[in-house]
Image (cartoon, rainbow, N blue to C red; front, side, top):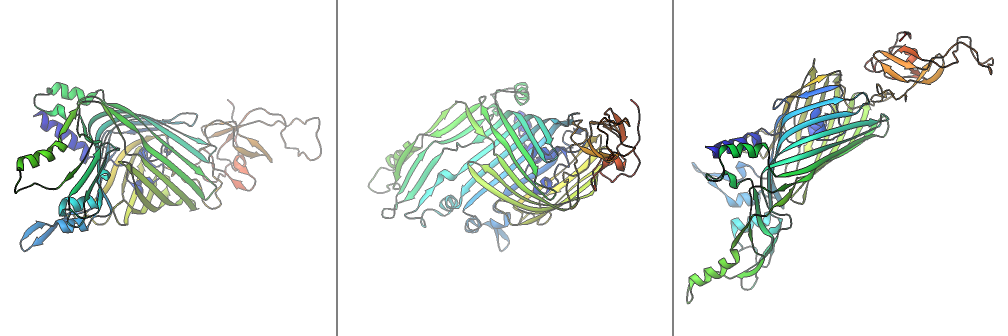
Length: 544
């Protein structure tokens, strides 16, 4: 019974996964709290955020080189497996991936200083299997066509990890142009099956004798958390305790930044899942001793068949060890260039690469993001994922009161089961309090936006008040607090001063919706309380 429960536990998180492979979702910018998983600096607008368990994110990403139609052919009324067709559909390097996360808890808030802080816990799975075409040809078609060729079996690798992450995220904006962010994560491992990245092996068919010449080092298959599922290993209470907490632990970090070059261009870069897990509990490793041997087949005439088989099997004795080991997460790097030709419109070029078993798997995306209103952001993207052709994706984030709904997919075409090689979709809802809904675009032709610097009380914004440029001290509700100028004339008074000028400094409250309080030169800056609209009311005063 506990085997079935454990299997269902893993399958639920496998097929209810929220993957980081989502270019169309990434192109939504900082619209949602989930955006910080792609770039740690993408903290959304608003003051307080709550992500509901499961409901805040349900998604699936799977990528395979071949489809059902690449393996099965119809012979009359019978479906048959065609290995020749399967091999011909493969590329030089191939793989299968399934990555995902399901949210357990997510809370975010923006401190008075402007610092974005988030606390989160996620259940995650990362499964990858990579192999070259030549290995598949050797296994399925034999070595008849590979005489004299050396096959690098060391390029075959597998890694399956099921773990939980607890994290703290920090994001901050400097001067309205630079965003920086980091997410520190503690990892709790549950299940792992993997091959070491230093595994090396080659097989060569001698072009004269046709004998197989094999050589390998570090030929191992590591497992953790598997042996406990045997009937006599642990009871149900121990199994539940293991999935609550155990000695398999590690750390990871996400780093990200975005820099706005000017009113038209911005550049962003993120590195995610840079980390490892040390596996200590329920560990078992199966391996072969380092060896080099030549296999010439089994002697059927004039020889001892048993001795021939024994001489080969001596090189394939499996050793079992119980030493702890370390596995690394499949790191992901994302870089993008944003061009903003119009206010609220962004064109985004994205390059990403996931490092799997030491191999780089690149992807590409070109998209457009449109801020329809302060509460609605949409994106459309053309994406090129590893092993796949170009496809079209869309994304949407909409805020209805405190409820924010989002949906994104990189694939809106080609969902035919027999021909489908990959799929990706994610959707969910969040609770957002205290405003928000703007996109992370702060530009556009002629825009003089300084969004992101308001409301932090740092006195870095310049206003024009009665003809003089002055700095705002801080903000309080709809009011901007600026130095007060009295009508008392200074000793160095000259005719250039007008009768209505104020000279001595004090403190004054000016309505942030006033055009005079926001005018700098010939441009109008966004005020923190007006949603960025040009202001038209007159300045008002109030006493503390």
